[in-house]
Length: 112
Image (cartoon, rainbow, N blue to C red; front, top):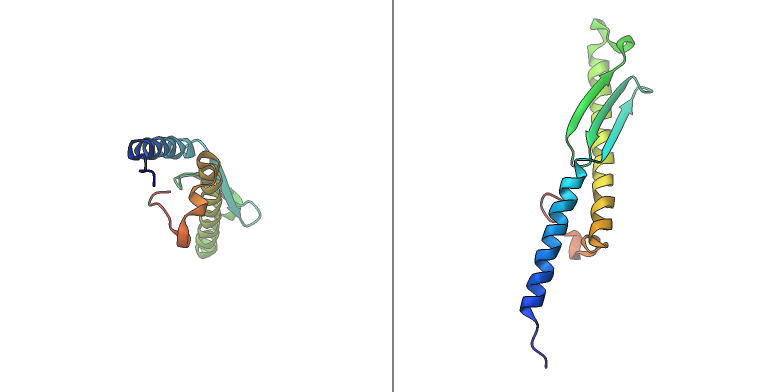
């Protein structure tokens, strides 16, 4: 039985770590947006789940309808974060050749 090549394996792990670090940095450049209320509230984020900007149509700003505005903001933020997660997963799968999607038992690497 052949001995495993530990130095080769460690080299592959190190290369994968470098690729993942680069991919995480690239996520900052992937923009996504979520909207609600037919575009009355739009949230702009990056694929690494950072909210960059919130745009609110002036017509929706009514002091008597603050609760509706709050609901629209929550809905738009949630949609933007969902799109950010999808974009991040797609980008990381492309970067790693799908290796991360094949982890056993739904195992997730923290921060990815």
